[in-house]
Length: 424
Ligand code: GDP
Ligand code: IMO
Ligand code: MG
Image 1 (cartoon, rainbow, N blue to C red):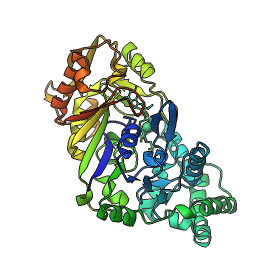
Image 2: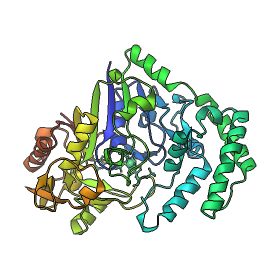
Image 3: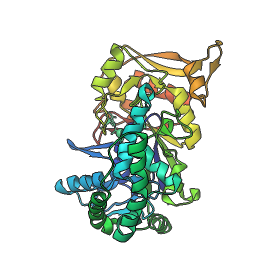
Image 4: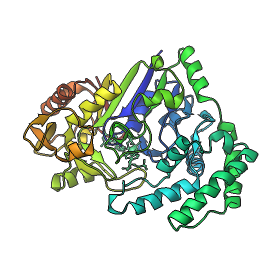
């Protein structure tokens, strides 16, 4: 039965939340498998805006089972406030489950995220300061605190004592920071555990059983391909695997379960945080895209850097994710720009051109984009619902983009609302 993955193909914020929300109306189960509350997924329904960080975007449908897999790092404090804010808006969170193996973001992870960023000086990554990197470090160091531990007070107390003591030493002796009161942390997190106990269940088993029962499953990617720890712009990346392949290890299902992989891109490119961005626009057009597109971070509120669509990047994403199709969001944002550009290849310092995204920052830094130009469009396309009704210049732009990245475009977003989508 259908098991679809939705992944980001650029540097995040492509509108994955919107696409998941639309597809979730046809799904029984929505699963998050990596990342944490560094993600910010926006869903707009009839003028109501929901900003989700850890809770899967399927939550707005009453009957959809929403799962948080083993590969996620979960900040219980933030998670509980997200639960409360949904409940206060009349959204039930009863159908939500968290895998016992999911790692818990502890307060020292957040502190260490800030301290290590400050230590990097001008070479900071520009993280969301949500403790994501330090939490994944502990996971791989094998000293992480997991969901199971959180809901078992005696295990939690023991782990906080051992890990917390070491973390306090690092915070005070390496960084000169302030130590945590471990008794107070134990008390606070025991309370979170009590609250979250009813949500714990084996997500690998739940997902596998749903698959066997012929249910439709959606895997909701967070972050994006160029933020992948291996295949992104390292070290300006996040600490997980946002690629389609990350879904299997992050959920605990085999790759043969997956039937369809959808990549989400914007009709242009954005990035928050630091690191290279070949098609970045530091000019009036870049400002216009930021203002018209409302390009300010969902999680941190930071202005997003903006630039032209980069086909080299999305071609890389088509390959490393094995994409079956693309959803292109925010075409509406490009209205009223005289000439649109798509980067087709990069020019190297020796004058040669490359069409594959380079594996290292050193190689990428010497690259300048080679552009193809397209006449823009001035029409308001936000009410169009059929591809054939789009202005000719829009259709040409999308068709050429498909050719350049080597993947068909199955959805085009023309506005933030759930209804503002063209399906082909
Ligand atoms: P995500 O992290 O990939 O889920 O994306 P975000 O929610 O962080 O950022 C995408 C932003 O674009 C949100 O504010 C969405 O409401 C908005 N959005 C999504 N699709 C469209 C679209 O087709 N047109 C416009 N104008 N806005 C969109
Ligand atoms: P969604 O799911 C955009 C970026 C941060 C920073 C880098 C590392 O909404 O698309 P981290 O806090 O993860 O250690 O930061 O990754 N980043 C995102 N950028 N969208 C996201 O998520 C992001 N999650 C992390 O800005 O550059
Ligand atoms: Mg986002």
